[in-house]
Length: 309
Image (cartoon, rainbow, N blue to C red; front, side, top):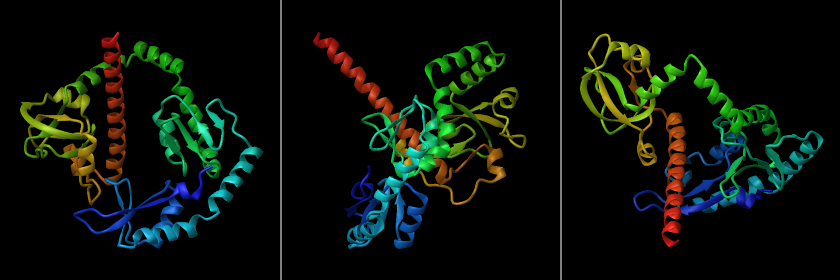
């Protein structure tokens, strides 16, 4: 069971080039965030810190005092109520274990991750490779469990193999291979009279990219119609620009759009991403970089072991 002292933390933060203050971290819950914003109207979410920043020299003391009022006894009662609800109507599934928390262990699935991120207080335990959901969130987990279990079954190795065989024998296999080959070219059509800025994070129909160069090579109309149907360049000459995926640090530094994307920008093919897109791209980039670092460490470990033997 998660105790109030560990569910919510406040830390003094005194940046050298900014105002003094304190950071607050707590598991996401919409109602909790609303109460927090009411108590601290000057608080702002900081992606670079991964926490809420409250300005003021006495911010840490104010946060600690508010935490004591907000959480004393509340979580213990909520967890007990969730335990009672689970006992009355348990979830029977090979993907769910019962311990101090509810433990969700499934094959990797983006759908499962997306569903669990919507469950208040759910968190990923990287050491045990399991999602931990406190009993206070049982009702939210119960509502999303059919989608979680269905996605987990679809992510099982045997189910993946069966889908792979079906994809290879399907009539659309050739089209998918052609799309993959086009994607590996790392090129994107842009209008000659509306060139995108280089070395800057932009949103496109392919996702967030950083354009590296404009080659000036004319884009074939048949290729545009087949692979880039959402981009219209009838009023200008379409040419190719090369791109790459931005890293996590670049995504953190990127400024979000202040207005919604317009139809003209969608037709043009590139626009400034909003904060929702940036946050999702940051999570994905951080996950990819961690996985890359893990693979590199394992490879170096194997090479060191082979050299010693």
